[in-house]
Image (cartoon, rainbow, N blue to C red):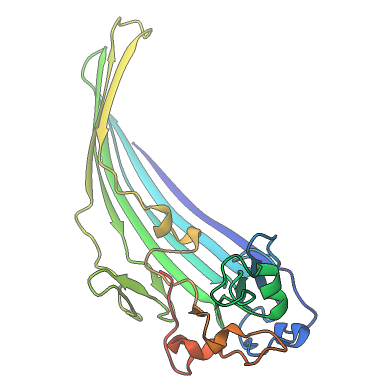
Length: 303
């Protein structure tokens, strides 16, 4: 009889900065209305001019995150006669603390609308719209504090390597999986409800029930055709309950967690929100366009 106990802890930290300005985006570029109270206020905004190279860093460039996984696993092996029986368990705790707003100072998109002649096709250019400050679409993501995601995972198993004969080995087994709902320490969770087609905010409550019937049977068969170990036929079957990448905390965007709070608005051609650059006829009011930007409102989740 042999018992093997393994304990491990893996940690990783990443600090990354986007193209930055010497001061806040509003002060450096003269663009009114860009909030300065969130993380990475000196990041150069992104300017998307149709048909031209993007100005500014790609989304999610500015980030600070720390992730670690703690694992405790134990396996007991018992050899008796023709049987080699193994049983054990594997527990994992996963933690992620992250600040990663996709566009912390905004993303401005420009096309021919705004520099074109009314009701005249083929007029206007995206570059002219940029120079005139005619913004077609604007979005911004504001994150003021860390998102602190937590996940817990348990597995239990038993299997038997049964040497039925000199040529035939059968390996039946059973695995039981508990994938606990992901949580966020401060209740900053958002879940998309398919029935209402809207985001819901469960706070500190579990975002989904714990599924307790993840029982996975499996069996393997190996047959030595010649009895000399030269030709072996193998077959197997099993049921597995593995987590998808979107449910793994290391993916940073858990299926049950809103990894950031944000404000996003779509700017229409006749809206005063289009005129966000200096010298235009109206000041930006982007944050007021979304209830998520109002004091006391819940953060908007991205699921």
